[in-house]
Structure formats: C-alpha cells, structure tokens
Image (tube, rainbow, N blue to C red; front, side, top):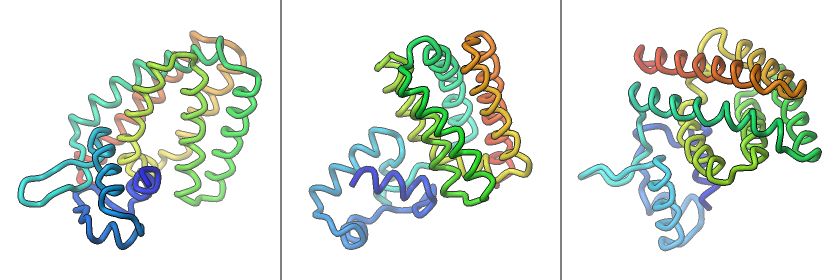
Length: 206
C-alpha cells in the first residue's frame, strides 16, 4: 500500500498540491480506511504529504529553499556513501550496481520517463544499500523519497538527461577504478548540478 502511494506520487499521478481524499483513495486502491490512514501517516512522516487547514492532506509542494536544503544534505551524505560502497560492497552488490547502470542507459536511450526514473532509482538504492552504514542509508532513503517529487522536474529540463547519464557513468567508472577521491569529487559535482537545474526550474515556475 505505502509503496503504491509513493509510486503514484513519484510518477505524477498525484502532483504537488493535489488533495488526497480518503474516500476516493479507498475506492481507487480497494483498501479499508484504517489501512489507508496508516499509509498516509507514514507518507506524512516522510515529508511527502502534509495536512493543510481546511483542505486536509495534500501532496507537498517543495520550495526552492526546501530543494536547496535537501540537496545540500544529500550531497554531503551520498558522496560519502558512494566512497564507502567502493570499500564495503559485496561482489553481488557490485554486480547489481553494474546492472543498474546498464538499465539506466538503456532506459534513457528508449526515452520512456517512467523507466528512466525506475532505473535511476535502482542505481541510487543499490549504492546506498552497499555503503555499509544503516544509519546513513536510512537518512538517504528518506531524502530520496522527497526527491522523487522533483526528479521529473530536473530530467525534463533541456539537456539535463544527457548530462545526467554522463555524470553517473563517470561516477560509476571512478567507483569501479576504486578511486574514492575521484568518486566523491564527481558525486559532489553531480548533486550540485542536479540541485542547480531543479532550483532554476522551480524558480521559473516550470
């Protein structure tokens, strides 16, 4: 249930500012109100939805300042997670990361937005899972849940997708070369670029 709602928000079926009406959701998802309310409480705790006076629950609309803060924390932690993956990941996790890299490039070549988002998320999830630090992984997972609200914004910007593919490919190659310093440098640049593009798009009302 919670995964279905997260996916619906990530894919834009429920956009920022959309009201989440319990009766309609129960009918659409074929679940009881207690189950739905528990899922909505979890989404609220993750910062994906919030309660607006006289409107009820709605999907969060992130501001430019929200984005700056989210990406600032993400950049600091995720470049460290990538470096830790290099030294801590198992052979199986390395294989999954390679598959995720290939899947992302294949999805980008096909140009299907939903497949691109799914493949990109798989790459990040694999990297985070292999960092060997459950506390850092938990924090980053929560940040990524909020970033799902923005991923379509950044990837829709002209020229962003080719740059994203190049940036992630370079990160992956630095990781496979076991160059942790280069990995962190490239990751910092990747997150800074994503933040800049996303904030510019939001500021322009796109």
